[in-house]
Each structure stands twice: as C-alpha cells, then as structure tokens.
Amino acid sequence: MTFTGKALVVDDEPHVRKYIGLILKSLGATAIVEASNGAEGFAAFQQERPDLVLLDVNMPVQDGIETLKQIRSIDENASVIMLTSLSNRQTVEEAVEGGALHYIRKDTPRDELVALINEVLAAEDDAANG
Image (cartoon, rainbow, N blue to C red; front, side, top):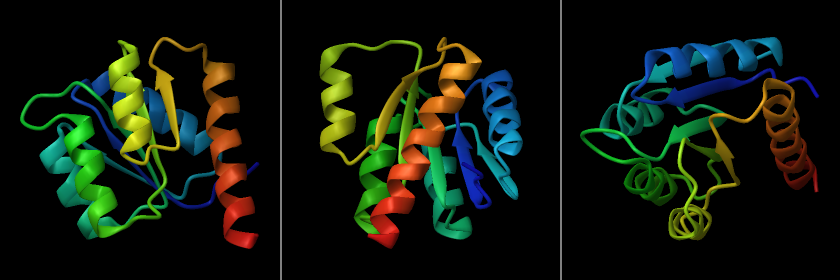
C-alpha cells in the first residue's frame, strides 16, 4: 500500500524519529513532521493535522499515553500507532483503551515494521471507504 499523506513522528530519540521517517517516506509519505516529546507532539498535531501519528510511550515532559488522550479528545478518528522499547501489558491496554490502532516495539525488524504500518493504513483506508 502507498501512503501519500502527512505523518507525525513523536519520539524523544532523534535517531528513532529519523528511522521511522525514512520508513514512512519509503511508503510514499508526502510530509514527515517530528516532535521530541508529547507536549510538542500534541501542538504539532493541532497545527499540522497529520493523517498518521507514530507516538512513543515513554518521553520526558509528557508521555505518549497522555498525548494519545489529548489527540483523541480533539479528533476521535485520529490514526495513532504507539511505539515503545518496553511492552508491558498494562501500557498496551492503556494505549488500546485510549484509541491507539496498534502498538509496535521499536526493535521490530524493518520489514515487519513496514508490514504492520501497511496493515494499519489498509484497515484505516477500508474503514474510510467502508
């Protein structure tokens, strides 16, 4: 699937933002917006209204779960994929209950990461054209 929209990557690690951005560009993303913490991410979401958000869970200033809640409070249809280096059951459940479409570990191999993002995009596309 080709993704021709705008994406927001929110992560406190610059190399992760760059890596995810490169993957999204390879899928056809027309613009990648980056933020280094949840507060910046929410502000960027409000300003840019991206088609897809990839959101880290653990960040300084404001974590991803709180940011997810803020995003969903202004756009209940926002497409958000959570990213994490940790995956405990409670955090996964919080993310899903908060409206995240998927939960991806950062150490997922690139080809699996691409497949998961494509899967989410295809599901969103099907729902939109439903």
